[in-house]
Amino acid sequence: MMQSSQLIKLAPTLAAGERYKLLVTDMQRVLGGEKALISESEREAMTHFQNRPAWEEYTRNICIMQWATTLWAKDIEAERLRVYAIWLTVSFTFERVLLDGDNNSISKKKRAEQFENLKKYVAMLERQSVEFYAYPEAIKKVEQELYGTPLFNKKKKAEISAIYETVDEFIDTHNEAIQMLCKNAVIKKRIRPIAADMDSYLIKKPVPQADLIEQIVNEIRQIGDSEMQMLGR
Amino acid sequence: MQAPNLAKLAPELSAEERYKLMTADFMARVNGEPQVMTESERKAMVRFPTTAMWKEYATNVVTFKFANTIWVNEIQIEKLRTFTCYLLAIHELEKIVVDAEDELPKERLAKQFESLKRYVKDFSDCLLEFRAYRDAIPILEKELCGAPLFSKQTCSFISNAYDLVDNCVKHYNDAIRHFCGDNDLKKYIRPVLEDTESFLVKVSAPDPSAVKELVDNLEELTEAELKSRE
Image 1 (cartoon, chains in turn blue, yellow):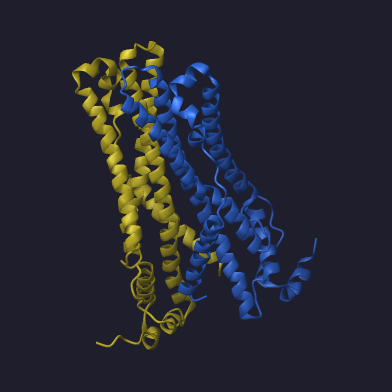
Image 2 (cartoon, each protein chain N blue to C red):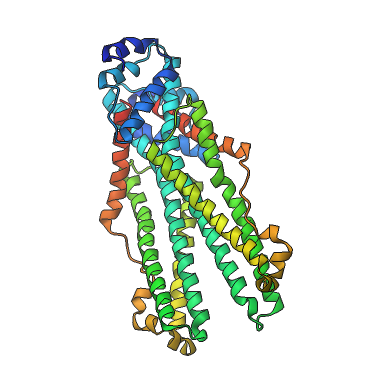
């Protein structure tokens, strides 16, 4: 490990990116419950810039990092809840389709409506999940821009992964149920529209869209820029 | 009347006046209206004679920014949480009513009523947290020199979120009251009749201390943010 005085001496020669990497990595260690490796005086030396462009580069990136970590974790939770609400609707509608499978008193029109609704909700879920699945790509993009430094500490990263695993499970549960029931000769007859057009009833995970990812990243950049403008930084 | 030259006027303005003008300028941009200030005026506004004055101004700006990002996000999350509670509760109630004539085993029936009661409790709890934000907004606005916190678009988003949730609560509670008054159904939903209160979503005013906590948390966050940037 480098001695304290060495880092203080070295600080003026370091580029904005190098300072960012060192300080943010250390800050994440502290947030993760580990001991800081950089002392207060070293931090002061690292945040003291000789020229304005280097200071602006560093400050802007810190702004982006702080807004991304604060807002994206919440955005992901909001997107998860949106997907979950639609998934509940899909699953309640599917349940009704199955329960009414041997209900002869239900009119043909109403029965057809049930299948149409299920198809509609599946499509809605696919549309809604596009944004949800764009966030991991946006995180990667910003991390790349921020000199490859991870945005989140290990704990937060694990929490975010768990959210994605849960949604993957929702989708797998639905798809497996559809596939399994369509293989069952008795049930298949009761859910004929699904068996005939299974693809429309299966939830497909979206391919991340480059323009949406760019839009998510841009929103964060704009928040960072407007903060710097309003604070006169 | 000619607009005053804010760049010349800026040095005489207090931190509070500068905050009001800068947020009005920001709001105009967000609302798609012509901006109040020019770039040079904006620059003059954020040039402060003392650090203390800058800090007073920056505290308001950072709190304003946090409210516009974190609170809006949290209102969205609370709305969605409350909405999923509604979906679960209304679905469970639907199951109870649909299954009413099927003579399900007593144990299974009891489980359905217990589930409904649990969902209703979650629904009431989420609702309380969600409504706390609505009460916190005017408090924070008052603390931030009385300037509006949100743009027209955000105000409309927030108002729609509360309308949606109010409608969900009304729909669910009306359904419970309707079933309790239906003579054909009454016998099937006896646990609801015997303890109606537990099956109704409670619409009560948020605890003032919970509201204050929201404001305090945001202000603490602001303080930490400014400290980290000193």
